[in-house]
Length: 304
Image (cartoon, rainbow, N blue to C red; front, side):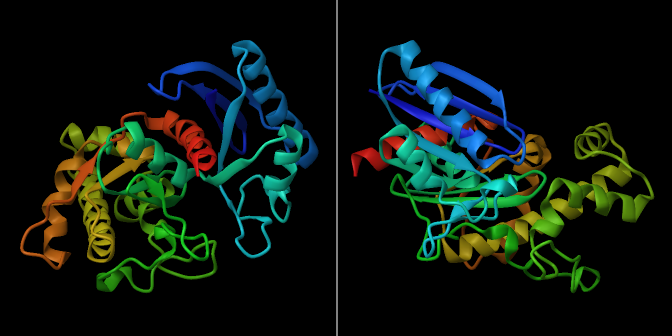
């Protein structure tokens, strides 16, 4: 038996097989996601799983991670960036194609499960995993198990308001969810670029801002300082509620080394404790954590 994970993204589908005892990658396959075609997407996933199982000569448990999640009410998909998946019974259909039970969770949950299982937060009792990229999301792991909540939205940190906003941060930018001032509108990659442009009239990518700041550019450093303060406030809010042992950052902005030093220096002011033992860590597996977490998700589902 092997643990098979599927990362079902908007542009590519990646499938990996992990050894259940060591987590070593045994096989990996990737194809472009069929655009706007639900049936073709299901067929591509099934074909990739079949290829890997045929190559290894072993049947596997299967977990799928994707931007979006099944509703605990209707069991239909919601909030997927591959919009052809929305309002579809994805889990039921893929289980029928693969002839087995399949676990499904959003990509932030899979990232967090990966880093909590054998990544940067391995051994921690409680883990909050953050995705900061084109959007902002998170997942929660308690005692090695994914916590999704009664409504399946545990960890939807990006759609809470930025806490303790400064006067010029209220009510905040409009969010695609229909509200204003969501954490995602301040901490995503596009939000960092927007903030830099507003204060400097310069257009720069998030990675370039980080490079310029490290080289001593005062304007870029000021942008990162504003960003770190907002992240410190947002994570302090999480610590005050969940009090995790470890917070792991993922997504493109997790490569900004400045954050791992500066955010913990700033968050203490907003945390209701005389000491802060929570650790902020970089991911061990980075972009590979999504598909690895999906594999562990499937394994945990089969073990229950």
